[in-house]
Length: 221
Image (cartoon, rainbow, N blue to C red; front, side, top):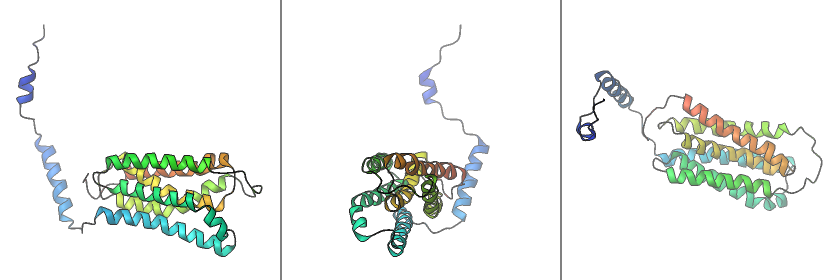
């Protein structure tokens, strides 16, 4: 018969510390402190991510207006959805970089899901037949998301990897492609759900996978 385990003795027992593990932790801490890199505020880094998304979005608007592919009245008609995308981008960026923003990150994911559903439900019938293959929208969304994704990955390296944080960063970046889709695409809701949201999901997956594979500059929470 086995001897019963004394729970009180286990709780009062000092934890065992391996000298090798302690030395590795100290060496990692010393090497991080030896870098002597300037500490950037997380709000500044969140602003960088938002600025990269906003700059690409404004550039696309300017190109479409100058090229005649978008008119002023059409832009005003889509303004509510565009503002929703910009708001979602800001909340997701804020949540991704906030050190203690677990609740905010969950709210950001919920807002992004509601935003995606709104884009699908608000899309009407196409006014003209499609002239390009449907996958072109997915490819163009991923192309405009590239620069904001790089910025997001750079700032994410400033803290320890967290899947929810990386997801929020990907959702923030994905709003850029969705913004372009609202301006340049007039296909129906099935197209939006199948090709626009696919690009958004791929960007989120890339943010999580790449953020996890990159070595962080700091292991701060």
